[in-house]
Amino acid sequence: MNIKIRKLKDLIKDIETLKQSSIKNKNEKAYTPNEFNYDDNFLLPDDVYLFKEKEEVQVNENMIDLSQYNMSFQNMENKRIIKGFGETGCSNLLLDNLVNCEIIILDILSSVLIQKIKQCTIW
Image 1 (cartoon, one colour):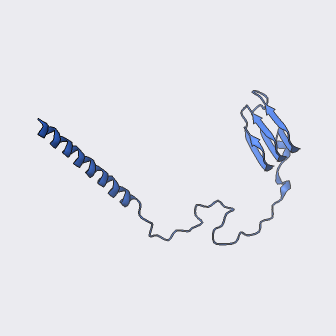
Image 2 (cartoon, helix red, strand yellow):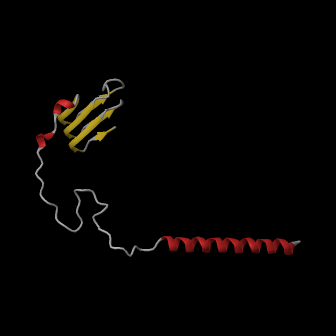
Image 3 (cartoon, one colour):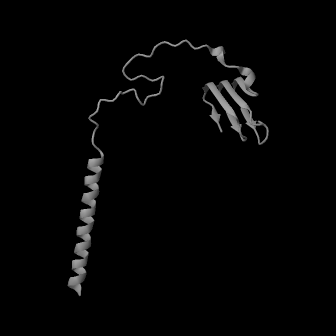
């Protein structure tokens, strides 16, 4: 009886060893470096360039139509802004030129435009 149990344990160990080596082989096969010549900038955002200098782009800061934003908070420092349920009316929100502010919106918004924000917390 003890011999059968010992043989069974040995078989289980052998199976586990084979299983581990099979997994290791699959992982080695799954990770092989690509031999293809891909464009290194393919997955980078549009404004990030790896091997070439970024072209100068003139940005017109007055391009934003402020009339479309029903709620806007601009040019504020050290403020706490809280909007509760039903206060926004699914409107558009503009957060511009805020420094060290805390913004808490507890409602649904149609869109949010955020620019020139420093050290702010938005919830």
